[in-house]
Length: 242
Image 1 (spheres, rainbow, N blue to C red):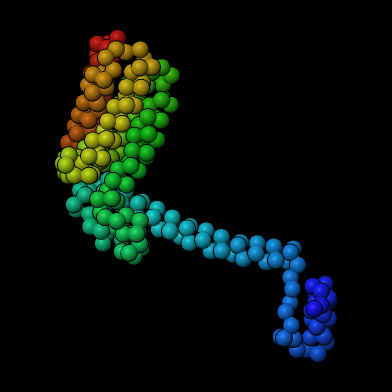
Image 2 (spheres, rainbow, N blue to C red):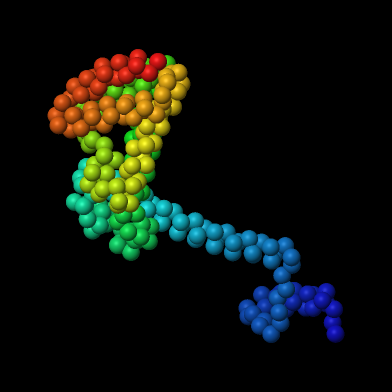
Protein backbone atom coordinates (compact mmCIF):
# COMPACT_ATOMS: atom_id res chain seq x y z
CA UNK A 1 0.00 0.00 0.00
CA UNK A 2 1.36 3.41 -0.93
CA UNK A 3 2.04 5.77 1.92
CA UNK A 4 -0.09 8.83 2.52
CA UNK A 5 2.79 11.04 1.42
CA UNK A 6 3.02 9.14 -1.86
CA UNK A 7 -0.74 9.45 -2.43
CA UNK A 8 -0.56 13.23 -1.81
CA UNK A 9 2.18 13.50 -4.43
CA UNK A 10 0.00 11.65 -6.97
CA UNK A 11 -2.93 13.98 -6.18
CA UNK A 12 -0.74 17.01 -6.82
CA UNK A 13 0.55 15.49 -10.05
CA UNK A 14 -2.96 14.63 -11.23
CA UNK A 15 -4.14 18.18 -10.45
CA UNK A 16 -1.28 19.52 -12.56
CA UNK A 17 -2.16 17.19 -15.45
CA UNK A 18 -5.78 18.27 -15.22
CA UNK A 19 -4.68 21.86 -15.68
CA UNK A 20 -2.54 20.93 -18.69
CA UNK A 21 -5.16 18.87 -20.47
CA UNK A 22 -8.16 21.09 -19.55
CA UNK A 23 -10.06 18.33 -17.78
CA UNK A 24 -10.62 17.31 -14.16
CA UNK A 25 -9.36 14.00 -12.86
CA UNK A 26 -12.30 12.58 -10.88
CA UNK A 27 -11.09 9.13 -9.96
CA UNK A 28 -8.50 10.25 -7.45
CA UNK A 29 -9.23 11.99 -4.11
CA UNK A 30 -8.00 15.52 -3.43
CA UNK A 31 -6.49 15.85 0.03
CA UNK A 32 -6.62 19.15 1.93
CA UNK A 33 -4.03 20.11 4.47
CA UNK A 34 -5.06 20.89 8.04
CA UNK A 35 -4.65 24.60 7.30
CA UNK A 36 -6.83 24.40 4.18
CA UNK A 37 -9.54 22.53 6.05
CA UNK A 38 -9.47 25.11 8.85
CA UNK A 39 -9.77 27.98 6.38
CA UNK A 40 -12.67 26.27 4.60
CA UNK A 41 -14.48 25.56 7.88
CA UNK A 42 -14.02 29.14 9.05
CA UNK A 43 -15.40 30.46 5.78
CA UNK A 44 -18.46 28.21 6.06
CA UNK A 45 -18.95 29.25 9.68
CA UNK A 46 -18.72 32.92 8.79
CA UNK A 47 -21.35 32.46 6.09
CA UNK A 48 -23.69 30.69 8.50
CA UNK A 49 -23.15 33.31 11.21
CA UNK A 50 -23.74 36.07 8.68
CA UNK A 51 -27.01 34.50 7.59
CA UNK A 52 -28.10 34.06 11.21
CA UNK A 53 -27.17 37.65 12.11
CA UNK A 54 -29.03 39.00 9.09
CA UNK A 55 -32.12 36.99 10.05
CA UNK A 56 -31.86 38.15 13.66
CA UNK A 57 -31.56 41.78 12.55
CA UNK A 58 -34.63 41.50 10.31
CA UNK A 59 -36.64 39.92 13.15
CA UNK A 60 -35.44 42.54 15.62
CA UNK A 61 -36.38 45.35 13.22
CA UNK A 62 -39.83 43.85 12.75
CA UNK A 63 -40.36 43.56 16.50
CA UNK A 64 -39.31 47.17 17.02
CA UNK A 65 -41.64 48.41 14.28
CA UNK A 66 -44.54 46.53 15.87
CA UNK A 67 -43.82 47.88 19.34
CA UNK A 68 -43.25 51.45 18.09
CA UNK A 69 -46.53 51.38 16.17
CA UNK A 70 -48.38 49.96 19.17
CA UNK A 71 -46.84 52.63 21.39
CA UNK A 72 -48.08 55.47 19.21
CA UNK A 73 -51.57 53.99 18.97
CA UNK A 74 -52.05 52.76 22.56
CA UNK A 75 -50.67 55.93 24.16
CA UNK A 76 -53.30 58.08 22.43
CA UNK A 77 -56.34 55.82 22.22
CA UNK A 78 -58.15 53.20 24.25
CA UNK A 79 -56.72 49.69 24.11
CA UNK A 80 -59.98 48.19 22.85
CA UNK A 81 -60.20 50.93 20.22
CA UNK A 82 -56.97 49.77 18.54
CA UNK A 83 -57.24 46.57 16.52
CA UNK A 84 -54.44 44.17 15.65
CA UNK A 85 -54.98 44.79 11.93
CA UNK A 86 -54.34 48.51 12.42
CA UNK A 87 -51.09 47.79 14.24
CA UNK A 88 -50.02 45.38 11.49
CA UNK A 89 -50.74 47.95 8.79
CA UNK A 90 -48.90 50.69 10.69
CA UNK A 91 -45.87 48.47 11.33
CA UNK A 92 -45.80 47.08 7.79
CA UNK A 93 -45.54 43.44 8.88
CA UNK A 94 -47.50 40.26 8.32
CA UNK A 95 -49.95 39.03 10.94
CA UNK A 96 -47.80 35.92 11.46
CA UNK A 97 -44.81 38.14 12.22
CA UNK A 98 -46.71 40.05 14.89
CA UNK A 99 -47.90 36.89 16.60
CA UNK A 100 -44.42 35.37 16.42
CA UNK A 101 -43.12 38.23 18.57
CA UNK A 102 -46.26 38.86 20.62
CA UNK A 103 -48.46 35.73 20.99
CA UNK A 104 -51.51 37.82 21.88
CA UNK A 105 -52.71 41.42 21.91
CA UNK A 106 -52.50 41.33 25.70
CA UNK A 107 -48.78 40.52 25.45
CA UNK A 108 -48.32 43.51 23.15
CA UNK A 109 -50.17 45.81 25.55
CA UNK A 110 -47.96 44.65 28.45
CA UNK A 111 -44.87 45.28 26.29
CA UNK A 112 -46.21 48.75 25.47
CA UNK A 113 -46.56 49.52 29.19
CA UNK A 114 -42.98 48.39 29.81
CA UNK A 115 -41.79 50.68 27.03
CA UNK A 116 -43.89 53.48 28.50
CA UNK A 117 -42.21 53.11 31.88
CA UNK A 118 -38.79 53.31 30.28
CA UNK A 119 -39.57 56.34 28.13
CA UNK A 120 -41.94 58.26 30.42
CA UNK A 121 -41.27 57.32 34.06
CA UNK A 122 -37.51 56.82 33.83
CA UNK A 123 -36.19 58.86 30.93
CA UNK A 124 -38.69 61.73 31.08
CA UNK A 125 -40.03 62.34 34.59
CA UNK A 126 -37.17 61.01 36.74
CA UNK A 127 -34.28 62.17 34.57
CA UNK A 128 -35.75 65.62 33.96
CA UNK A 129 -36.65 66.18 37.62
CA UNK A 130 -33.13 65.30 38.76
CA UNK A 131 -31.58 67.42 36.02
CA UNK A 132 -33.55 70.56 36.87
CA UNK A 133 -32.61 70.86 40.54
CA UNK A 134 -29.63 70.17 42.78
CA UNK A 135 -31.29 69.08 46.04
CA UNK A 136 -33.75 66.19 46.60
CA UNK A 137 -36.45 68.56 47.90
CA UNK A 138 -36.27 70.69 44.79
CA UNK A 139 -36.04 67.63 42.55
CA UNK A 140 -39.33 66.40 44.00
CA UNK A 141 -40.95 69.76 43.26
CA UNK A 142 -39.35 69.79 39.80
CA UNK A 143 -41.60 66.86 38.87
CA UNK A 144 -44.44 69.39 38.64
CA UNK A 145 -42.31 71.72 36.53
CA UNK A 146 -41.82 68.82 34.12
CA UNK A 147 -45.58 68.20 34.21
CA UNK A 148 -46.32 71.89 33.62
CA UNK A 149 -44.43 71.85 30.34
CA UNK A 150 -45.92 68.47 29.40
CA UNK A 151 -49.49 69.66 30.05
CA UNK A 152 -48.99 72.59 27.68
CA UNK A 153 -47.76 70.49 24.78
CA UNK A 154 -49.99 69.63 21.84
CA UNK A 155 -49.06 65.95 22.19
CA UNK A 156 -50.04 65.69 25.88
CA UNK A 157 -51.57 62.21 26.16
CA UNK A 158 -52.19 61.85 29.93
CA UNK A 159 -51.07 58.78 31.87
CA UNK A 160 -51.17 55.48 30.03
CA UNK A 161 -51.00 53.50 33.27
CA UNK A 162 -54.11 55.21 34.65
CA UNK A 163 -55.91 54.94 31.31
CA UNK A 164 -55.21 51.23 30.87
CA UNK A 165 -56.00 50.43 34.51
CA UNK A 166 -59.40 52.14 34.34
CA UNK A 167 -60.22 50.60 30.97
CA UNK A 168 -59.10 47.03 31.58
CA UNK A 169 -59.49 46.63 35.37
CA UNK A 170 -57.18 45.06 37.93
CA UNK A 171 -58.07 41.47 36.95
CA UNK A 172 -56.75 41.89 33.40
CA UNK A 173 -53.03 41.28 32.70
CA UNK A 174 -52.66 44.83 31.38
CA UNK A 175 -54.45 46.20 34.45
CA UNK A 176 -52.13 44.25 36.74
CA UNK A 177 -49.13 45.54 34.81
CA UNK A 178 -50.43 49.10 35.16
CA UNK A 179 -50.65 48.70 38.94
CA UNK A 180 -46.99 47.57 38.99
CA UNK A 181 -45.88 50.50 36.86
CA UNK A 182 -47.76 52.97 39.05
CA UNK A 183 -45.98 51.51 42.07
CA UNK A 184 -42.68 52.02 40.27
CA UNK A 185 -43.51 55.73 39.97
CA UNK A 186 -43.97 55.83 43.74
CA UNK A 187 -40.60 54.13 44.13
CA UNK A 188 -39.01 57.07 42.31
CA UNK A 189 -40.77 59.46 44.70
CA UNK A 190 -39.75 57.37 47.74
CA UNK A 191 -36.11 57.41 46.66
CA UNK A 192 -36.08 61.19 46.38
CA UNK A 193 -37.93 61.55 49.69
CA UNK A 194 -35.38 59.31 51.40
CA UNK A 195 -32.53 61.38 49.95
CA UNK A 196 -34.31 64.48 51.30
CA UNK A 197 -34.44 62.96 54.78
CA UNK A 198 -38.25 62.93 54.97
CA UNK A 199 -40.13 60.61 57.33
CA UNK A 200 -42.91 58.05 56.75
CA UNK A 201 -41.74 57.46 53.19
CA UNK A 202 -44.55 55.18 52.00
CA UNK A 203 -47.28 57.53 53.19
CA UNK A 204 -45.44 60.47 51.65
CA UNK A 205 -45.02 58.70 48.30
CA UNK A 206 -48.71 57.76 48.14
CA UNK A 207 -49.84 61.29 48.97
CA UNK A 208 -47.39 62.76 46.48
CA UNK A 209 -48.60 60.35 43.83
CA UNK A 210 -52.18 61.51 44.42
CA UNK A 211 -51.02 65.03 43.56
CA UNK A 212 -49.28 63.75 40.43
CA UNK A 213 -52.26 61.69 39.22
CA UNK A 214 -54.78 64.36 40.15
CA UNK A 215 -52.89 67.04 38.22
CA UNK A 216 -52.75 64.79 35.14
CA UNK A 217 -56.50 64.22 35.22
CA UNK A 218 -57.13 67.94 35.77
CA UNK A 219 -54.89 68.78 32.82
CA UNK A 220 -56.81 66.28 30.68
CA UNK A 221 -59.96 68.22 31.64
CA UNK A 222 -58.32 71.35 30.28
CA UNK A 223 -56.74 72.93 33.38
CA UNK A 224 -53.25 73.80 32.09
CA UNK A 225 -52.36 75.34 35.48
CA UNK A 226 -52.93 72.01 37.23
CA UNK A 227 -49.22 71.27 37.71
CA UNK A 228 -48.56 74.58 39.45
CA UNK A 229 -51.59 74.10 41.71
CA UNK A 230 -50.29 70.65 42.65
CA UNK A 231 -46.79 72.04 43.24
CA UNK A 232 -48.12 74.51 45.80
CA UNK A 233 -49.78 71.67 47.72
CA UNK A 234 -46.64 69.57 47.34
CA UNK A 235 -44.58 72.13 49.26
CA UNK A 236 -46.94 71.76 52.23
CA UNK A 237 -46.68 67.98 52.02
CA UNK A 238 -42.89 68.12 52.22
CA UNK A 239 -43.09 70.26 55.33
CA UNK A 240 -45.51 67.80 56.94
CA UNK A 241 -43.02 64.95 56.47
CA UNK A 242 -39.85 66.65 57.72
